[in-house]
Length: 466
Ligand SMILES: *Cc1c(COP(=O)(O)O)cnc(C)c1O
Image 1 (cartoon, protein in one colour):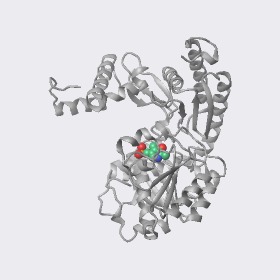
Image 2 (cartoon, protein in one colour):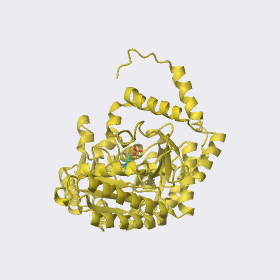
Image 3 (tube, helix red, strand yellow):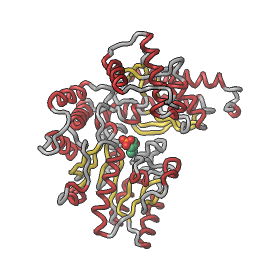
Image 4 (tube, protein in one colour):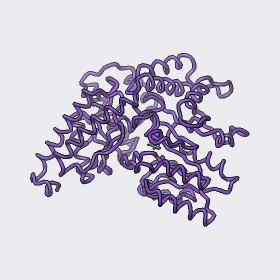
């Protein structure tokens, strides 16, 4: 971690990097050099902590696993030529697959014309994407603010709710325990994981958390806030919690939340950054129960796995607080032409290929398969749950989940799971994953579990985990 005896020449650094970028293939020696360089750069200049957590280092063989290119819609290849089936989907980025040709083509065409906007003339693609969002989102959601990430889309939703509700004397927020909404100070105030929050206390005042899926707890919270004068400006929820481990609320919860918000005059914000864009079998997860929020947050897969983009869509009633002064909340790159081109092509792909229906079909195939394995391997697997292609396998403990994700990695399947949080392993492949690839994933999962059983000190299920 010391750079005392290294003289860094910035021009050389850029030249070397540009050479790698231009390369179409690697010799064995080049691969070894590249992988060594990348590992060393992470250690010296990114964050050595990452190397402890990534399976690509611990399970990646002699040189670690360094990604090289997307080899198909649902697969990627590392510098050593190993091809992985992507069942992690970038935590919900790659709904239309990797390098989807329609998204790439739209972005390339726009790139050739004008990549970023002048900031003064009217940018056409922003207007067309906003119109598309008004057409595709449920209910009377209509106006859109564009930004660059999920966190920013939540941040904008919170500010919008504040601007709308402060004249009504409402300043507080209610979110759910287990929620993930991002890690900027505002979004983090809504996020509910102590490990992410503690070092940054105190966070924004006025945030309450209630157990997710418990309608009585929400009713009590809204009631208490009203009694104390801390009236609630908005309730913020993920329709299905993602980071929290793919937690589905009981049926009827979301409509009941909508009714409670209306009763107390609180706005309802849905964070569909992960559940949106077809992931759960509908374009937006809130459509499973026909519930329309006042504000909808989108990002991740919105950019088609090619560009980063976030969006905060709101009803005219709520959004109109920004009409007088549209500069109240802005960001330089939000809604830029390349991102809007990517998002427009993404919606086109999801609609023409009916990817929500594919998510339902392939989701059923994977869930049936994993549930069969859960019956065969009860000493490891506790539960398989989810909706569409947003699924989680809950293991008996974190170490077992990590072993599973490691074994899967060694069998060239990417699943989510980190050293410090692997009790629930998330399965979120591209919605374009084929039936054949799902079959392979299940075969490799069975092999992984078989290997884990063989490695455990005794085959007695109750004593198997050291
Ligand atoms: C990933 C995620 C975010 C944060 O999005 P970023 O693009 O990482 O800022 C917010 N909300 C939910 C539900 C997410 O899954």
